Image (cartoon, rainbow, N blue to C red; front, side, top):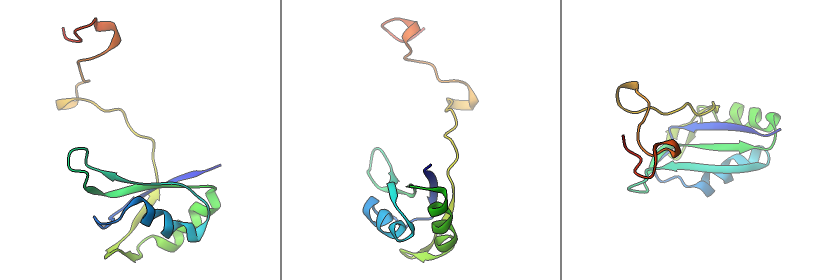
Length: 106
């Protein structure tokens, strides 16, 4: 079963292929993705790597956590499921949902 890792403190010049190449030394990389800003396309300084097995993920974490790469000390943790988003002040978002009709507003 594959294991997804959170990779923090990435240099802003790091791309998906750089991340994939670094982790490939520890096993099969299913996916590697550096998170970017929607508007600017610039890296946000973190990403995710999915390894083929838990053993490979553990090996990569042991070898690379705290290691200086791309001018920064990497922070690596097991990725957690994404939490639901809410609007301002913790209230649920309002707007476009199927049950509100064509306009999507109240």
